[in-house]
Length: 249
Image (cartoon, rainbow, N blue to C red; front, side, top):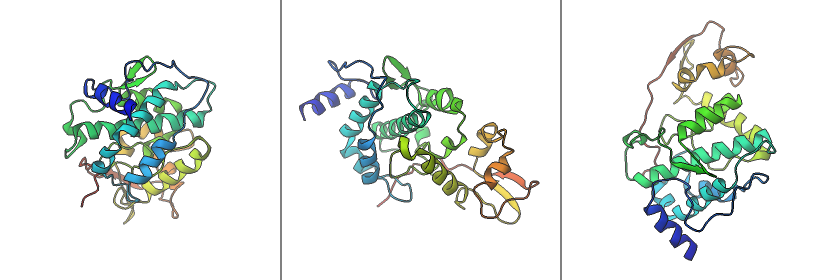
C-alpha cells in the first residue's frame, strides 16, 4: 500500500501514462516478456461481454492499472521476443493506456473531447515516450498484421469491442481470428444485407492494410463470412459513433 500511495502521488504530478515513480529504476528488461495477468484480471472485472466498460469501477483499481503499465515500461520488446509476444505486448499496452487516459479525464462523453488523445506522447517505455498514434501506426501497423485493427480499442462505441481478457502470446492467433470474425459479422458495425457492403470506416481508414498480397478488401472480409460476398459487391461506409463505450446503470 505504501508503494501504491507514492505512485499515485507521483501520477497526480505528471500526465504521463506509465511514468515511473521516483526511485523506481530497475532498468530495462529486454530478455524477458512481462506478465499480462494483472491486465487480464482487470478486464474480466470491469468489461462486459458486450465490450462496454465500467469506468467508475475501473477507477477503483486505477493503482493496479498504473502498476501494470509500469511493468510494461520496464520490459522493452526486443528481437529475442516472438512476433506473437511483441504483438500481444503492444496491443495490451495500447488498450491499457487508452483506459487510463479515459480515467484521467472521466467523466466525459467522448475520447475526442480530450486534447490530442492519440497524438500526445504520454506513454513511457523504457527511456522513450510514445503516443497512442505512434504505437498503432509506427509499430503495430508496420508488423504487417491487419487483424490488429479489431483488437485495438479507442474507447468509442463504433470501435472494436474491448475484450474481457488480455491478449497472450500463446493464444494470440486464436484471439485475433475470433475478434476479427466477431467484428466483421457484427451487424451493428457492418451491414452486409441486400447485396451490398456498408462497412465500418475502419475498413476505409486502413484499406491498404487489408489489400494484401492475398487479395482485395472483399477477399479479406470473405474469409470470415459463412456466405462470401460477390467480387463486385458495392462498398460504402457507415457513420462512426465516437461516444464513450461506457456501461450505463
